Length: 206
Image 1 (cartoon, rainbow, N blue to C red):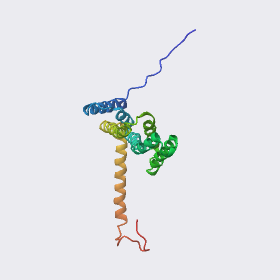
Image 2: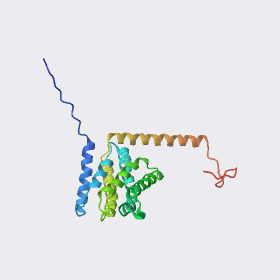
Image 3: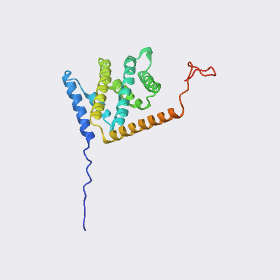
Image 4: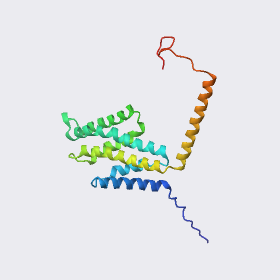
């Protein structure tokens, strides 16, 4: 009986891995120069900001930062309410009320994809941070996430992926086509002179 065994193909080490490592290294070095502060959240932000291409990094990193930015300030007052339980109400009531505020604020800003990162920040602060440092911790997390996301985006911009080059070429071609179309339309239909900011029917033009 003959048995054959084939090792599975190993995944290739692409440029994105090295760029991610570079962004994390940059963040750690920067935090080391700032007195050895904990770079945890900045490193997480750097990983989120490093997408396969520029737009993906902006989307994922932006959602991560926006969620932290919107969820962080909400958790501060509700942490106090949850810990002190004023009016004799159970702490879990304040917990879910704060979560409602986190979700609704994201909806107000149209940041649907940032709800999950915002909720993560909310629960992490609520359940893992001590009373004497929840304010400073939340502020540090917001700033650290922003620094990390910017580092990831900066590295991704300095060393663009092949898709970024194609997207840039496509965007330039679209702008050139739009410009040519506008010039032809201007020659075919000369602009008419407008008087004031209202149409003939007495309604404001938009």
